[in-house]
Image: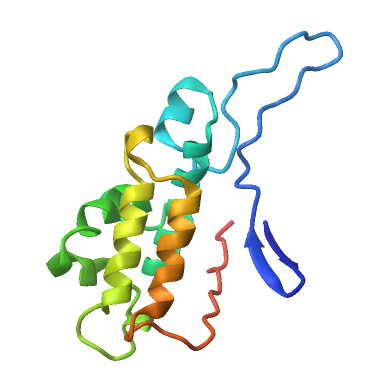
Length: 167
């Protein structure tokens, strides 16, 4: 869900909610809920949510912004359908990063900017398979805010338009 409050845009509700107990139930279900493509691997395996699960989900959103692709796209070749699996190997390699970057973010340059490399590094950390290796969300915010200080960062407004879903 995309919320604008006091002219500040916020992302929330990645769909990672557990089904609450029904009238005749006494426990909370551990059935995995949520939007495919955004759920952390450990959540899919165990049904247990943590703050690190949210960091992973945010990493997927950041990766969508960097690549211009959807988290899951069944219209792509099998190896490219999962955005995380397709792009993760390229996020730390400067030579391979340009292969996955959205060309619109390159602003006519042949290679990604320093800010883009740093943003890709943040996404890579958020998408770590190990929850313990993922940063705290406060560290992610600090790292993203520091990108504004880079001389090659885009300072004009950026509008992301989600591609229409094929139904």
